[in-house]
Length: 144
Image (cartoon, helix red, strand yellow):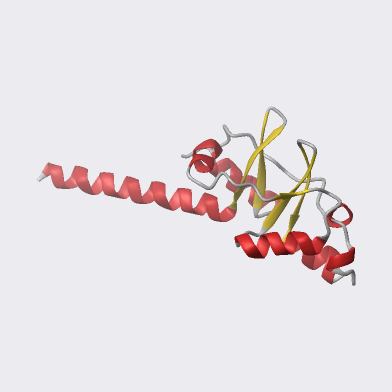
């Protein structure tokens, strides 16, 4: 099973971040432009929160707030779950399922190292299963 570090090594190194004082509309623009479902909210070099499409729906739209006038600090999640780079994809899936989240920030020695999504984990798992199936086919063919 792949580790978070292996998954991060296979994806873009670009982190989509904004400061807490940025407006929600800025986060929505970043997410739309980069086709991502979350923005990491960073204060200095520390992860202060995470803002996702779900936070927009529940904390902005349904709350009757406006995107241009609402700072991320007012609507981001600050009680987020995170993982270290040594954690397995399987453990991430279990945590995501338990916490009902689709994005996990990755922290290494307290510093932001990346983010993994449910899509990243599924891609990793599918690639691993395809590799294993190919190995099994080669093994069986070699027996004949």
